[in-house]
Image (cartoon, rainbow, N blue to C red; front, side, top):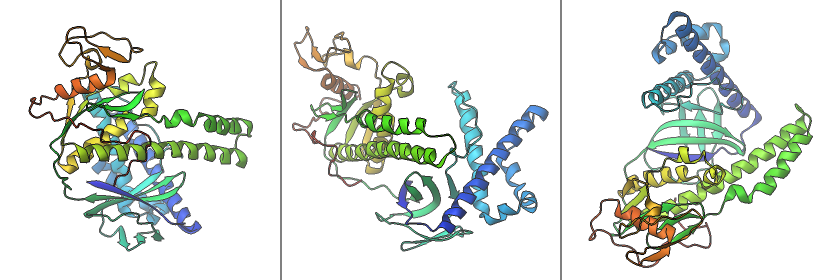
Length: 383
């Protein structure tokens, strides 16, 4: 399954109003269904399923005429979305993780609606997208969709409205290179590879601090509820969206290059959620390891490459010969007294990660020259 995201070209005021109305109805239905589940269990100790709530929709439409203006499967998907939230909640309890009970959605926390089936709800004809109960909109097809379209999500973002298609497609295998690589994620450098390549950490959030401070001060000076304050909030949200887009673009390009150049990729199985609660929380959130590793994982699977997660314990305190070499966080150079090997600590960690992937010495073929440019995040790659 792959997702393709396209921007909707200058939707008319009437279309935007229908989008907003659809989101409003779905959000209200979501919150009402959540309230029904909570009350049913508190009062009668009864658990209500998705099927129970879906069967009530015809009766609700007789009382609420605004529901008739929304495609029926869009309403069903709002209930399905709530059901998935509860399934995830019970799954976290079962795994003994922080549960996080499902929350009611405010106006700023529900920004999309979904047509779960391609038949009837929507139709794509060139650049024209026809939506049931809404009308025709034009989208900017920035790339070709390969595969069978399964679902469509209309999403509201700061920069406009977007159409997101979920497509079922076959794997697009890439040619084998016969190379393996170990990857050490860090803060000083975004990534360090076992062949000696170091990819710079561009710290998009940190470099935007001045713009963020100016935008936040504008908000604090505006009167609450005024149009000027809403405009200031919008400006701040646009800066945050730009930071997110920069991170995503960089992560896509780097992950694509790594998958193209290597057949076996070894990474650490990091507890990023736990690490992000320490003194380096701000830097870890800025580097966005989790987002990068997600992209690297699905691209490796799609390309027919092998990605191996290894135990991260002690990778920065171990030499390639296996000897433990204690280092503080400030010490950036590794020197082993046993074998005499000396190198940057992150390069040594990447080599240790590769060795922990369970490969034989014959299988480990490290590239001699760096495969990724270091001076700019604008890595030439097709994403």
